[in-house]
Length: 150
Image (cartoon, rainbow, N blue to C red):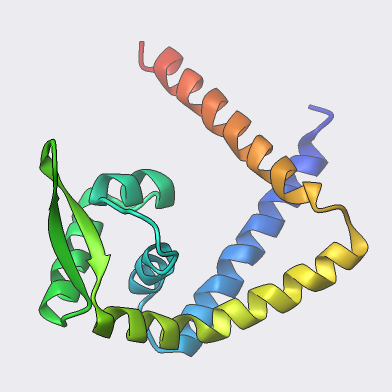
């Protein structure tokens, strides 16, 4: 296992990254799951519960509960998607957009400063490289899971 020290470095780095985002969420005054939902929805793109679960690895029950809470608070509305009977689009309301901007302001500022500093020291390809590694890890995991379970 010649790669074990590199893998451990990646593991430590991702654990530190998770911890930093947890601290930012805490500093922002929201629960971590709500933080990540707002982060996901605040990109101005089209989102369904399934897509958020797949992209952000939320358990379905967690995202369902969060969406219901956000609906009650007036932060999101669910809209029918033509041609898709069972899926709904999750949209931030004006109130939700304002809330997301308020909650996300510090994280965007922190991220932009950190990324600018990192890009002064390394190639922008590190982002694509990380995405490549995550994709490979996911593929190997899925194959392993299917092989191990028969």
